[in-house]
Length: 446
Image 1 (cartoon, rainbow, N blue to C red):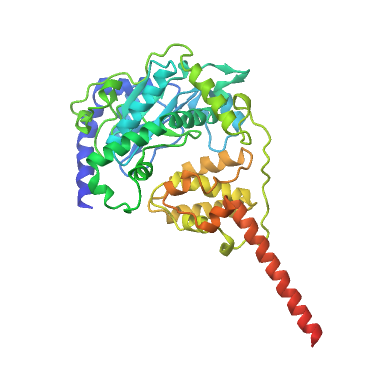
Image 2 (cartoon, rainbow, N blue to C red; image 1 turned 90 degrees about the vertical axis):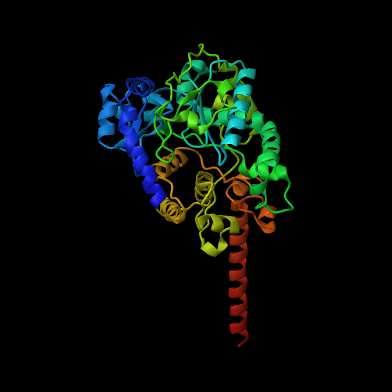
């Protein structure tokens, strides 16, 4: 508590001094145009949403009112103040004029984030993207931006602006897939050199490569109205600025380079060429289509019917739940967003009514070591109900290991949590029927 108090005192001491800088105000104000913004206060509570800056002076007025950082949307809106929670997909599409691709690199170790950032830039340049923005997150990661200007405005007569968050998610997956092998190799090399003390806590029978997978940086899922830290906004936990870098500076970057009292202001949004990210977007959509024949994305990201049909478990009880789902429902410390993705798809796939569904989700969130923000959960639930029901990931996917869940051998035989509960429900029903038959036969004998 004392350490936290010292950090709070430090951030409060430098906040007004730092944000009084005209170059900092200008950087935040110019980047925020056409974006939803939200000030954050010391206790990590956001101000009212939606909000936007009308004048550059609005920034310092919010700081004087206690704001310590500023966050903005990756989506670009014609009228940000017209946004309302619970809007339909059509209403959002009517307001959305575009989106930037934001790759949010987040790791426990800054060195791993550096490795991934450099690999991503290498992949982007391979596909002809030369103008790339990058900034320090303020803690242990980086934000990479490809501006809306870099993307084609239409593919196969589908408006790119209306394909948020589907296409940014596909792009993110494609880029990570392209980086994966080199990432594991380089993280393994780094862990051997620098993290021997950490590796002692990993079971001795695990290979270093497996360790690398456990701690590799994660690209946070893209979602509607997701906010990220504005360039040159302060970070409350570190009192560092979200400073902009040149790609060649990543390797040698140190947190002290983001000292708010010394940082030099640069432009985060690069001057992209019109459509320079067209090739990588088309390549990502083709890759996704070939990889997911039975998924909800078809040609150029248009939706198509899937073979999966939701089931209705009429005799649902907690004892029938798969062990991995039970473990997740006890609350998690790491991988909360992945865990939320798993249980949302699981509960929707087995036909739980919406009231019970939301009740279970919010009860689970309260059990997490650090609960997710209510607004984030609401956005994920709304996204789920605006789309076709899809089953949770199969047990052999990294979702489970990534949040510390090891599926049992029995679960692995059933491949998916939905298959598991269908089988268990059927067995339970058969056992009950057999019991009733035996009971009836015994009465007849008497």
